[in-house]
Image 1 (cartoon, rainbow, N blue to C red):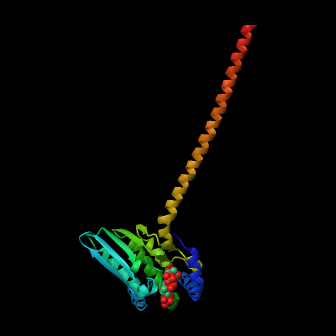
Image 2: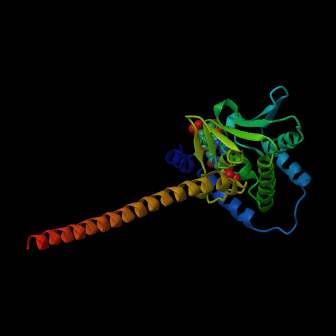
Image 3: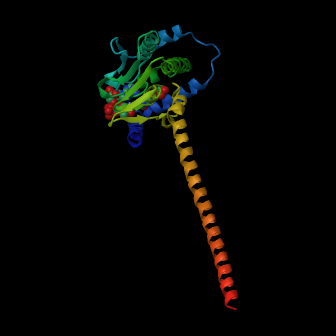
Length: 255
Ligand SMILES: CC[C@@H](C(=O)O)C(=O)SCCNC(=O)CCNC(=O)[C@H](O)C(C)(C)COP(=O)(O)OP(=O)(O)OC[C@H]1O[C@@H](n2cnc3c(N)ncnc32)[C@H](O)[C@@H]1OP(=O)(O)O
């Protein structure tokens, strides 16, 4: 599923200078800022960056809503403006009393290429990094806590922040052409949108459980074989012992 080779080569060629910017971005976002900005302040800031939108359509008959990330020129990369849209849509879904489920997808069969790197370049300051991570962590937390079943429809690319959005849903439906990449480490970044914790519930815990069960089964099999072998040896020795006794008896009788 993960086409790391391709993504890696893309990074070094197309997004070479972004690597430096995102590294600065990481350092900036890691530094602590004592003054907590209000969400209204962050909204105003993010709204100034980029194009694209997030479309929400709610079907009142089925109770199923569709959320579409829409920034086709940039493979549905999430701009500052889209971050604001996404949060607004999630707020609307929180209030949708008759809703049952929400499907999250990208425009034109491509899920999302992560944060808009032009935004990352432009907002690569301490303030910008802290605003974006605060906003997106809160938004994706709220997506996770929606009282609806959430499904991300993973077609095409889900990279960086795109992968983080995908794992924030309850389920992921993966198309054959999907390419899913937590490419943060390659860019000197941590998944500041909260993707690591989502991954924990999505992948690491289930896989650890499967691995633990597998190891437990192997151990059980080993114990059974060992006990069985010991038991067999015991039986054989008992048999030999009885046979000896029997033969001795015959010998004694003959005498
Ligand atoms: C800091 C936030 C961090 C997080 O919190 O998680 C991130 O998300 S960082 C962003 C991580 N994402 C990436 O680095 C993805 C970069 N993009 C790619 O690797 C590739 O574009 C692709 C997604 C694999 C698609 O490849 P392909 O189909 O060959 O299309 P192109 O490469 O030609 O792209 C078309 C067009 O789109 C622009 N583009 C793509 N992704 C982004 C993006 N994330 N931000 C801004 N622009 C993006 C790309 O530059 C092309 O533009 P033009 O050259 O002008 O046509």
